Image (cartoon, rainbow, N blue to C red; front, side, top):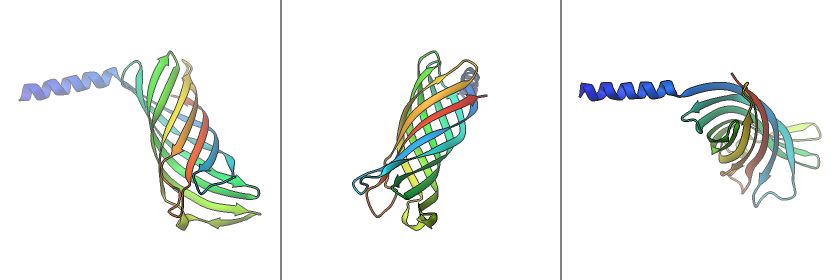
Length: 181
């Protein structure tokens, strides 16, 4: 039994040494909107996201990329702005198609930190009417230069309603630039 345990530890340690863990930071622009049956004729909100990224390379062609992002989302309609900001945790499976170019997909979990509507300089807190957690899926692509500078484009689609009062979900297209250390 001791030999099997020792062999398992040795195999795991060897595998861990063969894998690479990288860290980085990224920021970019969000083109966010609300989708669903209860959302009609509203415009998107242009805002931002910023956060930390890690990449755990499991093989030469596959990696897991967990992130922690502050993502400012919502929508606009004439002179009304819905501000929905989240701390988002996407876990992306990343497939390297060619050197530097990758496709990524995975789930995200987001925690609402700002929920308000603003009109003519007056803000109203909507925390009681907004769900505190958002869940969804994301799909995107990226390109990383050998020096660590990377560019990503992603669409994140909310799968849960932002409010218990109706059918409205987050949707956000993100363009990012970042650097892996």
